[in-house]
Amino acid sequence: MELHYLTATKAQELFAARELSPVELLDAVVARTAWVEPAVNALTEEMLDEAYGAARVSEARFAKSDQVHGPLEGIPLLLKEEQPVAGRTIEEGSLLEKGTIAERSHPIIDRIHAAGAVVHGRTTTPEFCSAPYTHSKLWGVTRNPWNLDLTPGGSSGGSGAALAAGETILATGSDIGGSIRIPSSFCGLVGFKPPFGRVPGMAPFNQDTYCADGPMGRSVADVALLQNVIAGPHATDQASLRPAYVLPAPNAALAAGMRVALCVNLGDYCVDPVIEANTRAAAEALRSAGVIVDEVSLPWSRKKLVATAWAHFGGIMGPFINDVAGANSELLMPYTLDFARRAAQADTFAEGLVAEAEIYEPLGLLLEDYDALLCPTLATQGMAADFADPSGLIDVGNEQVTWIEAAMTLPFNIVGRVPVLSVPSGVAPNGVPTGVQIVGRSYDDATVFTLGAALEQSLGLTTNDSWWPQFAKAATS
Image (cartoon, rainbow, N blue to C red; front, side, top):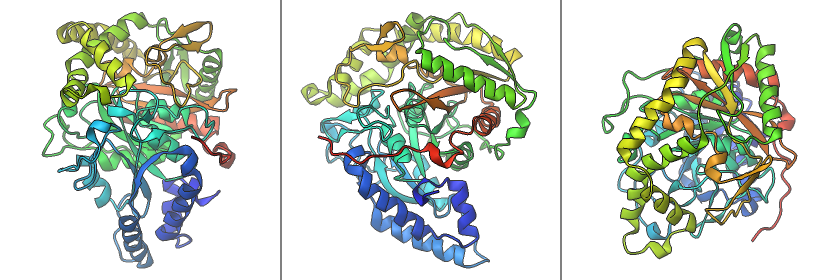
């Protein structure tokens, strides 16, 4: 396998055996970035002086047998730009924030550095992370390396695109409506939305039960590795849970005998036939691993799910955008303005809280009988990279739906205390991967990683060296 497509766990093995050095691996991803980045446009900045300094320190540690290594020692990693780094810009894809310098770092940043990671850059987002695609007036259009005409998803789209293109080994994301899982699905990656409070955050969104910072990578084991570094209580976040939850190494063999509920449409979602076929293939792969999979139904409706989410966004994220914009709303992207408008017109926050409880109950009852739920990550095969109309419709099967109705991630932000792992399930005819979600009982993170490891091993997609996109460099505007 080419060095830039190594998993973190494989790189660690090579470091320990002194068959590869952290500097050589950083050289590989930096060279790859220089080659693909003009077309993919996944990075807001590179931090190469700091990165090479960290890589040389790690190289020296691996050269001595008596040195203690951090859990991410020598591994190249990219940070989602939304997670501020003290002394660097925090612009959130917005002209309103251009040139703003962060005074404090996000709680996970120090943990990542302390773990020995080689942080070498930061990744693009849509403006204020308010869209499932990644383009903005500030940073331009981020494209999917599997198909440059299509989006890598959002809002952690830069992280997803960079991982799929081989520009890094690990990356961070955040998720308030699917923002880790959507790009993980579209980019053929593994991504984890931790349950609320598992990973510390920053005000005001550390108080938002929909929102979670989390890991993205090219294998279930890699994602577990990064999750264990960033999880745990933090002195600045009263919502962060203690004690720290440590995931065991994912073991596919432990999945045998587990019970999984398969629900393809989550009630009444219209699902693309290719997505459904790949989801059913994932279910069969779990059965091959000894998992008991039963098809079930849920009494959910898209209309109620979407209305409930907008009520929540109307209480937190919508007002946050309006406060930042002030009298300068003309600088905002159309999709940001549309987001704030829809949030302002929604039901009250209190009405949303009641609906959230009503939505959780049937899932909670279902998970009394099953260890996890399996469903598609997205209902659609893809969206244009420069998807411009926030009210535009997407073709899904025989229907046309809004983007929020195609994001089957959203229900599990509404019930934000459940852990959700997105794992690749196949590739669509447009060349873009598809994914499934493994949804666990509240705060039962280990089970979704066990099932994810079993699915990854049984399907054999990302474990195959030929899985990653045959990227054809192309000039884009």
